Image (cartoon, rainbow, N blue to C red; front, side, top):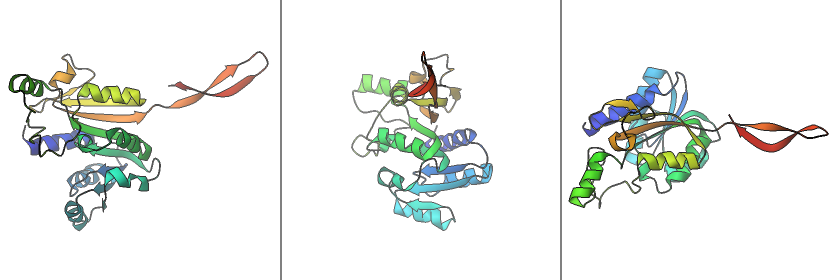
Length: 227
């Protein structure tokens, strides 16, 4: 699966997780190809933020709602739940503080869609085992000294982080290195080995007050229960 086909497959799966007429923020939108796809196919209202000034200007020239900005610094300009979905496609591993970014995604959006290459894939494991060098694959095509990726993590690492942060994984889709799609949770094979790329639909857990009964009266306490 070459890089362009991989990106297109990734975008199609992201689209499949989004409802029509949604408000969407695409972080690291490039020149806006995914924005165009979502506006056309979902009649969505899509805004993009892009760190590269050159790519941002190309998106603006296409008539797209693109802002030149750095997601590591500029997400504070967006108010809480100002979007239905926030997308971070193939970028989390390049962020300096990925945990902070995840918090921002779910502050800004009701839901977040995150996709990334899985460093636990069997090809990477074999290259490390037999070559003893940093792997180069279709999903991670850079040498160690010029890669934009600064955090290498596996599917299991990401799932554990979501659990630690009380993030709900509403849906999770894996792609094999040949582009075959499968449900990560429903996989009969170890997903952390066969997943080349992963796409997650995320949200925060909803809480509601617990009514505690005393001998004298019923009262609300600052406690919460997970639905």
